[in-house]
Length: 157
Image (cartoon, rainbow, N blue to C red; front, side, top):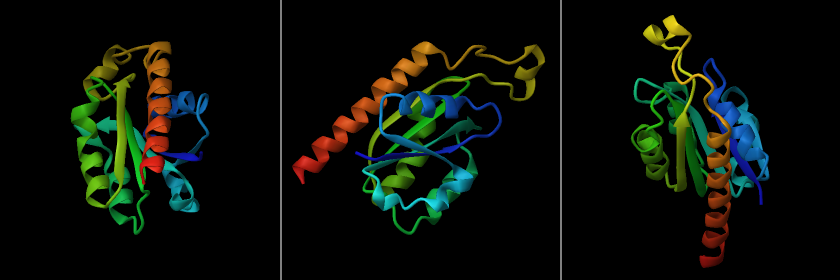
C-alpha cells in the first residue's frame, strides 16, 4: 500500500506533526503543498490533504490546489489542526470539494493545535503543548482505519 499526505503548513507546524505521527505506522509519504506537483497522485492508493484551519476552513492555497487538480485520487482523506479541533465542521469544505471532483473521502481527522493567531499570541498562544501524545495516537488510529477502508474498497470493486 502506498499513501501520500499533502500538507500545507502555515507557520507553527502542527499539522505536519500529525502527518509525521501517521507516517510512523503507515506507508505514508509526506509532501509539502509547494512540492505536491512533483507527485503523481494516481500512483497512490489514497492521498491525504491536510493543513491548519484559518477562519473556519483550510487555507485557500490548499483549496485552490485541489480545485485545479485535473485528476483526483480515487480515495482520499482529510486532516487538520485548529484552535478548537472541530474537524467535522472545518474539514467539510475540503471534503465536499474532493467529492465533487470524484474522489471518495475515506475519513476526516482533526485535533487541537497550538494557536497564536491575533489576540491569542498575547499570552503565548492557546492549546500549548498541542498536538500532544493523545493527538498523535488518535492520528495513528485514524490512518490505520483509512488503510483498512482502502483494503475494503479495493476488494469490493
